Length: 370
Image (cartoon, rainbow, N blue to C red; front, side, top):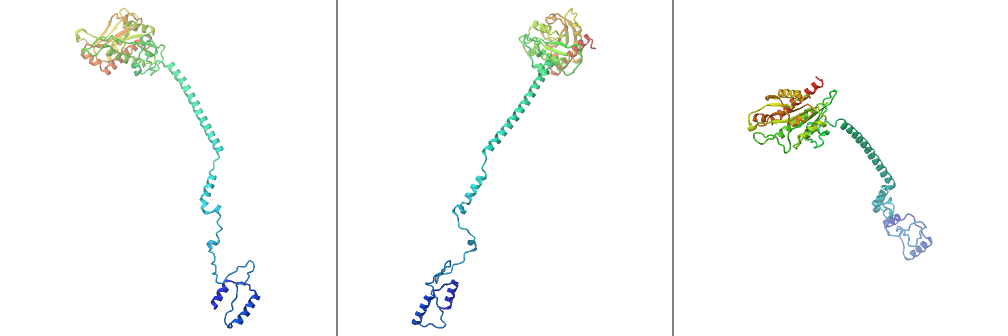
Protein backbone atom coordinates (compact mmCIF):
# COMPACT_ATOMS: atom_id res chain seq x y z
CA UNK A 1 0.00 0.00 0.00
CA UNK A 2 1.17 3.49 -0.73
CA UNK A 3 1.10 6.45 1.63
CA UNK A 4 -2.25 7.67 0.38
CA UNK A 5 -3.98 4.49 1.30
CA UNK A 6 -2.26 4.45 4.61
CA UNK A 7 -3.34 8.01 5.26
CA UNK A 8 -6.88 7.13 4.37
CA UNK A 9 -6.85 4.37 6.87
CA UNK A 10 -5.49 6.70 9.48
CA UNK A 11 -8.22 9.21 8.79
CA UNK A 12 -10.93 6.65 8.99
CA UNK A 13 -9.96 5.56 12.47
CA UNK A 14 -8.34 7.65 15.08
CA UNK A 15 -8.07 4.93 17.72
CA UNK A 16 -7.25 1.31 16.91
CA UNK A 17 -6.50 -1.41 19.44
CA UNK A 18 -4.07 -4.09 18.23
CA UNK A 19 -3.50 -7.55 19.60
CA UNK A 20 0.29 -7.58 19.86
CA UNK A 21 0.71 -11.37 19.94
CA UNK A 22 -1.04 -11.80 16.68
CA UNK A 23 0.86 -8.96 15.10
CA UNK A 24 4.22 -10.44 16.13
CA UNK A 25 3.30 -13.81 14.77
CA UNK A 26 2.26 -12.28 11.54
CA UNK A 27 5.38 -10.22 11.30
CA UNK A 28 7.56 -13.26 11.79
CA UNK A 29 5.74 -15.09 9.04
CA UNK A 30 6.19 -12.14 6.73
CA UNK A 31 9.95 -12.03 7.39
CA UNK A 32 10.28 -15.59 6.31
CA UNK A 33 8.20 -15.26 3.16
CA UNK A 34 9.32 -11.91 1.84
CA UNK A 35 11.57 -9.01 2.63
CA UNK A 36 10.04 -5.77 3.22
CA UNK A 37 11.80 -2.61 2.27
CA UNK A 38 12.82 -0.07 4.71
CA UNK A 39 10.69 2.53 3.17
CA UNK A 40 7.64 0.33 2.65
CA UNK A 41 4.82 1.23 4.91
CA UNK A 42 3.80 -1.04 7.66
CA UNK A 43 0.39 -2.60 7.24
CA UNK A 44 -1.68 -2.95 10.21
CA UNK A 45 -3.93 -5.95 10.22
CA UNK A 46 -7.21 -4.90 11.59
CA UNK A 47 -9.12 -8.01 10.68
CA UNK A 48 -8.82 -9.51 14.10
CA UNK A 49 -8.81 -6.33 16.08
CA UNK A 50 -11.21 -6.24 18.91
CA UNK A 51 -12.82 -2.91 19.56
CA UNK A 52 -13.11 -1.63 22.99
CA UNK A 53 -16.44 -1.29 24.41
CA UNK A 54 -18.34 1.86 23.35
CA UNK A 55 -15.85 2.31 20.47
CA UNK A 56 -16.91 2.04 16.88
CA UNK A 57 -15.23 -0.51 14.74
CA UNK A 58 -14.26 0.61 11.22
CA UNK A 59 -13.66 -1.91 8.48
CA UNK A 60 -10.97 -1.22 5.92
CA UNK A 61 -12.26 0.30 2.74
CA UNK A 62 -15.53 1.32 4.36
CA UNK A 63 -16.46 4.89 3.26
CA UNK A 64 -16.57 7.49 5.87
CA UNK A 65 -20.06 8.49 6.88
CA UNK A 66 -20.98 12.02 6.00
CA UNK A 67 -21.86 14.23 8.88
CA UNK A 68 -25.57 14.70 9.25
CA UNK A 69 -27.04 17.96 7.95
CA UNK A 70 -27.61 20.66 10.46
CA UNK A 71 -31.20 20.69 9.47
CA UNK A 72 -31.56 17.00 10.21
CA UNK A 73 -29.52 17.18 13.42
CA UNK A 74 -32.15 19.19 15.20
CA UNK A 75 -34.98 17.06 13.95
CA UNK A 76 -36.59 14.90 16.52
CA UNK A 77 -37.82 11.45 15.69
CA UNK A 78 -41.20 11.51 14.15
CA UNK A 79 -43.95 10.48 16.49
CA UNK A 80 -47.01 9.17 14.73
CA UNK A 81 -49.25 10.63 17.35
CA UNK A 82 -47.78 14.09 16.80
CA UNK A 83 -46.80 13.82 13.12
CA UNK A 84 -47.17 16.95 10.87
CA UNK A 85 -49.93 15.18 8.97
CA UNK A 86 -52.13 15.21 12.06
CA UNK A 87 -51.35 18.85 12.90
CA UNK A 88 -54.48 20.24 11.18
CA UNK A 89 -56.57 17.50 12.66
CA UNK A 90 -55.24 18.29 16.11
CA UNK A 91 -55.84 22.02 15.58
CA UNK A 92 -59.40 21.32 14.59
CA UNK A 93 -59.88 19.29 17.71
CA UNK A 94 -58.42 22.06 19.79
CA UNK A 95 -60.62 24.63 18.05
CA UNK A 96 -63.68 22.54 18.65
CA UNK A 97 -62.79 22.22 22.27
CA UNK A 98 -62.35 26.01 22.48
CA UNK A 99 -65.73 26.68 20.89
CA UNK A 100 -67.63 24.32 23.08
CA UNK A 101 -70.77 26.09 24.37
CA UNK A 102 -72.16 25.72 27.81
CA UNK A 103 -75.74 24.75 27.06
CA UNK A 104 -76.89 25.42 30.59
CA UNK A 105 -75.73 29.02 30.50
CA UNK A 106 -77.25 29.58 27.05
CA UNK A 107 -80.60 28.24 28.27
CA UNK A 108 -80.52 30.56 31.30
CA UNK A 109 -79.64 33.54 29.08
CA UNK A 110 -82.51 32.75 26.69
CA UNK A 111 -84.97 32.44 29.59
CA UNK A 112 -83.83 35.80 31.00
CA UNK A 113 -84.18 37.54 27.62
CA UNK A 114 -87.67 36.10 27.13
CA UNK A 115 -88.65 37.14 30.65
CA UNK A 116 -87.43 40.73 30.00
CA UNK A 117 -89.28 40.90 26.67
CA UNK A 118 -92.46 39.53 28.21
CA UNK A 119 -92.25 41.98 31.11
CA UNK A 120 -91.71 44.90 28.70
CA UNK A 121 -94.64 43.80 26.53
CA UNK A 122 -96.93 43.53 29.56
CA UNK A 123 -95.83 46.93 30.78
CA UNK A 124 -96.55 48.54 27.40
CA UNK A 125 -99.89 46.75 27.26
CA UNK A 126 -100.84 48.03 30.71
CA UNK A 127 -99.89 51.59 29.80
CA UNK A 128 -101.83 51.32 26.54
CA UNK A 129 -104.88 49.98 28.35
CA UNK A 130 -104.68 52.80 30.87
CA UNK A 131 -104.43 55.37 28.08
CA UNK A 132 -107.30 53.79 26.17
CA UNK A 133 -109.45 53.68 29.32
CA UNK A 134 -108.66 57.30 30.07
CA UNK A 135 -109.38 58.20 26.45
CA UNK A 136 -112.66 56.29 26.61
CA UNK A 137 -113.70 58.13 29.74
CA UNK A 138 -112.70 61.43 28.14
CA UNK A 139 -114.57 60.60 24.96
CA UNK A 140 -117.66 59.54 26.90
CA UNK A 141 -117.58 62.78 28.86
CA UNK A 142 -117.06 64.80 25.71
CA UNK A 143 -119.88 62.91 23.97
CA UNK A 144 -122.18 63.50 26.94
CA UNK A 145 -121.43 67.21 26.95
CA UNK A 146 -121.35 67.74 23.18
CA UNK A 147 -123.61 65.00 21.83
CA UNK A 148 -125.44 67.60 19.75
CA UNK A 149 -122.34 68.93 17.95
CA UNK A 150 -122.28 68.11 14.22
CA UNK A 151 -120.49 69.57 11.23
CA UNK A 152 -122.02 70.49 7.87
CA UNK A 153 -121.36 67.09 6.37
CA UNK A 154 -122.90 65.24 9.29
CA UNK A 155 -125.88 67.55 9.05
CA UNK A 156 -126.43 66.66 5.41
CA UNK A 157 -125.88 62.90 5.81
CA UNK A 158 -127.77 62.44 9.08
CA UNK A 159 -131.32 61.10 9.05
CA UNK A 160 -133.86 61.01 11.85
CA UNK A 161 -136.07 58.03 12.50
CA UNK A 162 -139.79 58.34 11.85
CA UNK A 163 -140.90 58.07 15.45
CA UNK A 164 -137.88 59.57 17.20
CA UNK A 165 -137.14 62.86 15.51
CA UNK A 166 -136.13 64.47 18.81
CA UNK A 167 -132.92 62.44 19.16
CA UNK A 168 -129.44 63.95 19.01
CA UNK A 169 -129.18 63.00 15.32
CA UNK A 170 -131.19 66.05 14.37
CA UNK A 171 -129.15 68.47 16.49
CA UNK A 172 -126.56 70.78 14.97
CA UNK A 173 -124.83 72.50 17.88
CA UNK A 174 -121.34 73.17 16.48
CA UNK A 175 -120.06 74.89 19.62
CA UNK A 176 -117.90 77.18 17.46
CA UNK A 177 -118.68 80.23 19.60
CA UNK A 178 -119.36 80.17 23.32
CA UNK A 179 -121.97 82.71 24.20
CA UNK A 180 -123.24 83.08 27.73
CA UNK A 181 -126.98 83.13 27.45
CA UNK A 182 -129.66 82.25 29.96
CA UNK A 183 -131.53 79.97 27.52
CA UNK A 184 -130.71 77.42 24.87
CA UNK A 185 -132.92 77.67 21.78
CA UNK A 186 -134.52 74.63 20.12
CA UNK A 187 -135.26 75.38 16.46
CA UNK A 188 -137.03 72.96 14.09
CA UNK A 189 -136.10 73.23 10.41
CA UNK A 190 -138.65 71.57 8.15
CA UNK A 191 -137.78 70.62 4.53
CA UNK A 192 -141.11 70.62 2.68
CA UNK A 193 -142.49 67.52 0.92
CA UNK A 194 -140.26 64.40 0.43
CA UNK A 195 -140.52 60.83 -0.79
CA UNK A 196 -143.59 60.24 -2.93
CA UNK A 197 -144.72 63.81 -2.14
CA UNK A 198 -142.64 65.56 -4.81
CA UNK A 199 -144.14 69.03 -4.52
CA UNK A 200 -144.17 71.39 -7.49
CA UNK A 201 -142.27 70.84 -10.76
CA UNK A 202 -140.14 73.37 -12.64
CA UNK A 203 -140.76 74.54 -16.21
CA UNK A 204 -138.36 71.93 -17.62
CA UNK A 205 -140.22 69.24 -15.70
CA UNK A 206 -136.91 67.85 -14.42
CA UNK A 207 -136.57 69.54 -10.99
CA UNK A 208 -138.88 68.82 -8.04
CA UNK A 209 -139.63 71.14 -5.16
CA UNK A 210 -138.79 68.43 -2.56
CA UNK A 211 -135.14 68.29 -3.72
CA UNK A 212 -134.39 72.04 -3.80
CA UNK A 213 -136.25 72.56 -0.48
CA UNK A 214 -134.07 69.88 1.19
CA UNK A 215 -130.86 71.47 -0.10
CA UNK A 216 -131.77 74.89 1.30
CA UNK A 217 -133.10 73.46 4.60
CA UNK A 218 -129.80 71.66 5.27
CA UNK A 219 -127.85 74.88 4.75
CA UNK A 220 -130.15 76.77 7.15
CA UNK A 221 -129.80 74.02 9.79
CA UNK A 222 -126.01 73.95 9.37
CA UNK A 223 -125.69 77.68 10.00
CA UNK A 224 -128.03 77.67 12.97
CA UNK A 225 -126.14 74.72 14.44
CA UNK A 226 -122.92 76.74 14.55
CA UNK A 227 -124.40 78.87 17.30
CA UNK A 228 -123.39 77.61 20.74
CA UNK A 229 -126.80 78.32 22.26
CA UNK A 230 -128.91 76.68 19.54
CA UNK A 231 -130.07 73.08 19.10
CA UNK A 232 -131.42 72.25 15.67
CA UNK A 233 -133.81 69.44 14.78
CA UNK A 234 -134.68 68.60 11.17
CA UNK A 235 -137.93 66.85 10.27
CA UNK A 236 -136.14 65.02 7.45
CA UNK A 237 -132.55 64.85 6.19
CA UNK A 238 -133.15 62.63 3.16
CA UNK A 239 -135.68 62.06 0.42
CA UNK A 240 -138.39 60.34 2.43
CA UNK A 241 -142.01 61.02 3.21
CA UNK A 242 -142.94 62.59 6.56
CA UNK A 243 -146.57 63.49 7.20
CA UNK A 244 -147.57 67.02 8.22
CA UNK A 245 -148.94 65.66 11.48
CA UNK A 246 -145.57 64.07 12.30
CA UNK A 247 -143.72 67.31 11.53
CA UNK A 248 -145.93 69.29 13.91
CA UNK A 249 -145.62 66.58 16.55
CA UNK A 250 -141.79 66.75 16.35
CA UNK A 251 -141.85 70.49 17.04
CA UNK A 252 -144.12 69.98 20.04
CA UNK A 253 -142.04 67.17 21.56
CA UNK A 254 -138.80 69.15 21.50
CA UNK A 255 -140.58 72.22 22.88
CA UNK A 256 -139.30 74.25 19.93
CA UNK A 257 -138.80 77.99 20.28
CA UNK A 258 -139.40 78.42 16.54
CA UNK A 259 -140.27 76.38 13.45
CA UNK A 260 -139.00 77.31 9.95
CA UNK A 261 -140.57 75.41 7.04
CA UNK A 262 -138.79 75.71 3.65
CA UNK A 263 -140.78 75.54 0.41
CA UNK A 264 -140.80 76.80 -3.21
CA UNK A 265 -143.74 78.70 -4.67
CA UNK A 266 -145.49 77.78 -7.90
CA UNK A 267 -147.87 79.37 -10.37
CA UNK A 268 -150.29 77.47 -12.52
CA UNK A 269 -149.62 77.32 -16.26
CA UNK A 270 -146.04 78.45 -15.57
CA UNK A 271 -146.74 82.17 -15.31
CA UNK A 272 -144.15 84.86 -14.73
CA UNK A 273 -144.72 85.30 -10.97
CA UNK A 274 -141.48 85.52 -9.02
CA UNK A 275 -140.01 86.60 -5.70
CA UNK A 276 -139.71 85.71 -2.02
CA UNK A 277 -142.57 85.60 0.49
CA UNK A 278 -143.10 84.35 4.07
CA UNK A 279 -146.29 82.96 5.57
CA UNK A 280 -147.47 82.88 9.20
CA UNK A 281 -150.49 81.47 11.03
CA UNK A 282 -153.47 83.78 10.94
CA UNK A 283 -154.57 85.12 14.32
CA UNK A 284 -151.40 83.91 16.01
CA UNK A 285 -150.41 85.71 19.22
CA UNK A 286 -147.22 83.72 19.88
CA UNK A 287 -144.95 85.96 17.78
CA UNK A 288 -145.35 84.10 14.47
CA UNK A 289 -146.07 87.34 12.62
CA UNK A 290 -143.00 89.04 14.07
CA UNK A 291 -140.89 86.00 13.15
CA UNK A 292 -142.21 86.12 9.57
CA UNK A 293 -141.42 89.83 9.27
CA UNK A 294 -137.85 89.36 10.61
CA UNK A 295 -137.10 86.43 8.29
CA UNK A 296 -138.59 88.13 5.21
CA UNK A 297 -136.80 91.43 5.71
CA UNK A 298 -133.38 89.94 6.55
CA UNK A 299 -133.43 87.34 3.76
CA UNK A 300 -134.43 89.88 1.11
CA UNK A 301 -131.41 91.97 2.15
CA UNK A 302 -129.05 89.02 1.57
CA UNK A 303 -130.18 87.98 -1.94
CA UNK A 304 -131.21 89.78 -5.08
CA UNK A 305 -134.85 88.82 -5.37
CA UNK A 306 -138.15 90.63 -5.29
CA UNK A 307 -139.72 90.76 -1.81
CA UNK A 308 -143.40 89.83 -1.86
CA UNK A 309 -143.79 90.53 1.86
CA UNK A 310 -145.47 88.44 4.60
CA UNK A 311 -148.84 86.67 4.26
CA UNK A 312 -151.31 84.84 6.51
CA UNK A 313 -152.47 81.31 5.92
CA UNK A 314 -153.57 78.35 8.00
CA UNK A 315 -151.32 75.74 6.38
CA UNK A 316 -151.44 72.52 8.41
CA UNK A 317 -147.81 72.77 9.43
CA UNK A 318 -148.55 76.23 10.86
CA UNK A 319 -152.01 75.47 12.21
CA UNK A 320 -151.00 72.38 14.21
CA UNK A 321 -148.04 73.98 15.99
CA UNK A 322 -148.08 75.95 19.24
CA UNK A 323 -144.87 77.99 18.88
CA UNK A 324 -143.79 80.83 16.54
CA UNK A 325 -143.81 79.19 13.10
CA UNK A 326 -143.35 80.43 9.53
CA UNK A 327 -143.35 78.94 6.04
CA UNK A 328 -140.79 80.54 3.68
CA UNK A 329 -141.47 80.41 -0.06
CA UNK A 330 -137.90 80.92 -1.31
CA UNK A 331 -138.89 81.69 -4.90
CA UNK A 332 -141.06 80.40 -7.75
CA UNK A 333 -140.06 77.02 -9.10
CA UNK A 334 -142.19 77.76 -12.15
CA UNK A 335 -140.19 80.93 -12.94
CA UNK A 336 -137.12 80.42 -15.09
CA UNK A 337 -135.26 83.40 -13.57
CA UNK A 338 -135.96 82.34 -9.99
CA UNK A 339 -135.04 78.72 -10.70
CA UNK A 340 -131.74 79.70 -12.25
CA UNK A 341 -130.83 81.33 -8.92
CA UNK A 342 -132.32 78.61 -6.70
CA UNK A 343 -130.20 75.89 -8.34
CA UNK A 344 -126.98 77.87 -7.70
CA UNK A 345 -125.20 76.63 -4.50
CA UNK A 346 -123.79 80.10 -3.79
CA UNK A 347 -127.26 81.65 -3.99
CA UNK A 348 -128.59 78.93 -1.69
CA UNK A 349 -125.83 79.78 0.84
CA UNK A 350 -126.83 83.46 0.91
CA UNK A 351 -130.51 82.57 1.13
CA UNK A 352 -129.84 80.24 4.08
CA UNK A 353 -127.73 82.90 5.81
CA UNK A 354 -130.58 85.44 5.55
CA UNK A 355 -133.16 82.98 6.98
CA UNK A 356 -130.82 82.06 9.85
CA UNK A 357 -130.05 85.69 10.75
CA UNK A 358 -133.74 86.67 10.62
CA UNK A 359 -134.66 83.79 12.96
CA UNK A 360 -131.94 84.58 15.53
CA UNK A 361 -132.78 88.29 15.46
CA UNK A 362 -136.39 87.48 16.33
CA UNK A 363 -135.43 85.12 19.18
CA UNK A 364 -132.92 87.59 20.64
CA UNK A 365 -135.47 90.42 20.49
CA UNK A 366 -138.14 88.26 22.10
CA UNK A 367 -135.84 87.28 24.98
CA UNK A 368 -134.44 90.77 25.48
CA UNK A 369 -130.98 90.01 24.10
CA UNK A 370 -130.74 93.07 21.86
